[in-house]
Image (cartoon, rainbow, N blue to C red; front, side, top):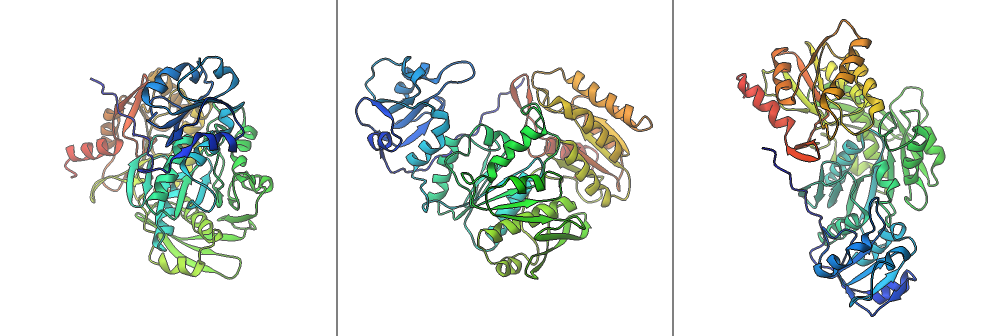
Length: 513
């Protein structure tokens, strides 16, 4: 029987300084229909509304939030802000109601005000965006900051970190009300620096409104999310919003993808550049000096004859580049290069869940579980695993249902080109037919490379066992897609599932414990 997985709770500060609703009305020049009230939080959703909250009732895709005013009052809302349309749906109430023409456009600012996240009263904020490398750069940046003595926070696809506390994530970038509550909680815990992973959707959907990042970083842009954006230009424009004066104060841009220069040209803030490509003129250069099974060593050189040598406990030259980007972001924020170099001279102390994570014991075929789910991610990770594998390389993967279908053939072609054996299985089918998704992948792979040994196996529990039957010690399996995730989305139900646990169990059945 399938068990519906509970969604992690929204994090808020343990204590808040009460805010007068009348003061908020005056600051945001709202039309107030009622008396004053005391606010201790803010919510846009009655599923998380708490006593003392300001309920922001906005139009949605299917209905208007104002229709839930009775539920909001029942749960303890102190006041309501809505648009003119919403005000027509709300009768005279015992709590005040204020009108704002575009609540979504001011939601982040409202939340920042309610939680007291004012300039000079918040940690140093870092944001990283790009198709691939956002998560790894965010984790590596947090590690660098922690190693130089900062009290750190992090929010990413996988986790939230608050001064050493680790919580499972809800979204890559939470809604602006949740983000502001999270920043307030971090501030409460003495966090000095926060590394935040920012998706294109977060920028488009205004989830980081009300925040100005001290440093914004750009990793790369490649084929992904074209179900949300009409083309690459629209996708690029969504990312570029992070580098406007209203979003950031400084930018660090990687020039290794063709879109790096375009981001640098579009940026409205001072830009520092970084690259690992020979012949590319950049302020900072990354040179990989060794790629080993459990570590990648590199050298970072800067504009003032600065040289730093260190390593990351991760596979691949792309991970060294992400680390370089993270270091430069820390420097641009005002941290001492020499202090950073000294703190990380023996390596950056970071653990990235589900990023080319080795889950096999010594003596067994190597099994790497990875979160990559785009053609470019496949290309980089396959290359990294190939360099540390003496024998055959088997690729195991599936594709997301109800997501960008245009990238599926490219995913299959890149996988087929980079491995010796290919096993195609299921990932998150959502409401799509998983057999149809697999057929698209198998057909594209076979058309691209007819001579390749290809297996179609469902479900993934069986697929990893078939994959292990096709390899031996000295060979490697790259299981791409599931990474750190602990569920599969099947027909709208989050079914508990862990690729890491499943791989370890399958290895154990073969005597590799």
